[in-house]
Amino acid sequence: MIRFYILVILFALLMAFSFAQADSQKGREVFLQNKCDTCHYPDTVSLGPTLGKIAETYTYKGNKARLIRFLNGQEKPIVFPDKFESVMEAFLGNTKLLTPEQREDLADYIMSHEGIRSK
Ligand code: HEC
Image 1 (cartoon, rainbow, N blue to C red):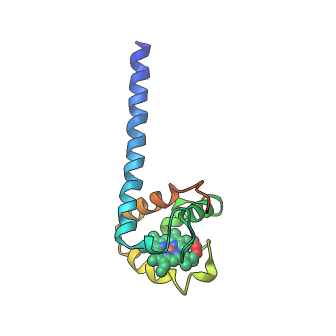
Image 2 (spheres, rainbow, N blue to C red):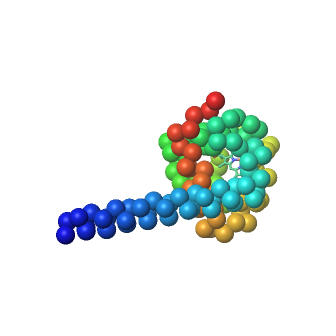
Image 3 (cartoon, helix red, strand yellow):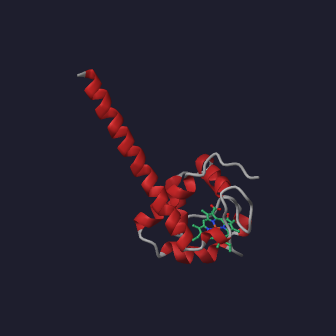
């Protein structure tokens, strides 16, 4: 009987894990559809900061909820605030048009890069 419970628990954990993956996978699609990858790579600095850097900043200085509000134009930038107005601000026009669910998936995708260091 104990074996059965262990199996049930393992199955539940597996399901929870695959749902979490699905969100950041959907977020990756939103990221690519909106051409965010023109300026943001996982680990290589481009016109914009790396996804690793953004995830790290939002882990220590903010949180996912704040990132979602940033993507909805409701919070000030915290990664490179001095570079915000010239480049990034215009792209919030795209992210503000997303559904709340898509914005959350996008934030999940960005946060999934925590721990990825820049080259
Ligand atoms: C033309 C280049 C460019 C594109 C395209 C671009 N970004 Fe950015 N992004 C930047 C720059 C530069 C910064 C640094 C300024 C800043 O921190 O806001 C930045 C910063 C960010 C930040 C950190 C905000 C903070 O708190 O400072 C997030 C999150 C972000 N971008 C998400 C996105 C998403 C999502 C998209 C696609 C909709 C996107 N970016 C498209 C250039 C770009």
